[in-house]
Image (cartoon, rainbow, N blue to C red; front, side, top):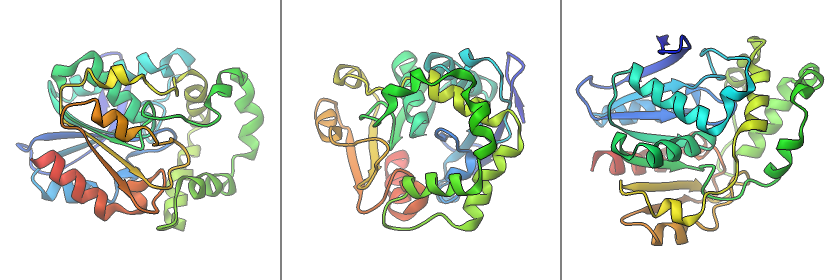
Length: 269
């Protein structure tokens, strides 16, 4: 557990040589460091110092009550504070889904702190269907949803996030569902749904990125549409796009082997 300057405590997993090039793995909405369970060891074996923090509202990290803590600028600032607390003036960032948008925010606001940027099924790269309606959901509505938050609901969400390569196991379901043991978890992820900016960034913002960028997604990602990745990459210097056949939104846990190969090649080059 790592204390930040504002008093927030963040749960962090670390693997690999202490002197290796640092790589920060940021997990998406509703997830935890468990999202990277198939990726941490292969990256560490490649000689990288792998750091997987659970951003506030997730996993074992603190979950502040204020909705303002879960806006996009606030989450970007929080992730930078995590890097500060870990003594990381500069690192490669890997961001999945919502955390891809956070990693993008860091790269745009503090480019000197990002050596490389890997975006996995990242919010901000494409449209998130239905996201425009989230701002109209009442803030206290999670009280009505909470009694119906069950393993079945988590199973349906995971099935939607997977493609046709694999399916989340019973163990996976229990790991994700276990976060609901914290009474503040649902409120935190509900606040993120309302406060976070799920819209795609304009291509002009991507063109500002000077560091190497890897776009990685599943062919059957139904959560973040990836139709414009190729055009975004063409407008950037040296950006790469990898689309894993038949995989879904959680591509790095559904089909980890091609993802690990791509990440090791990209981050170790």
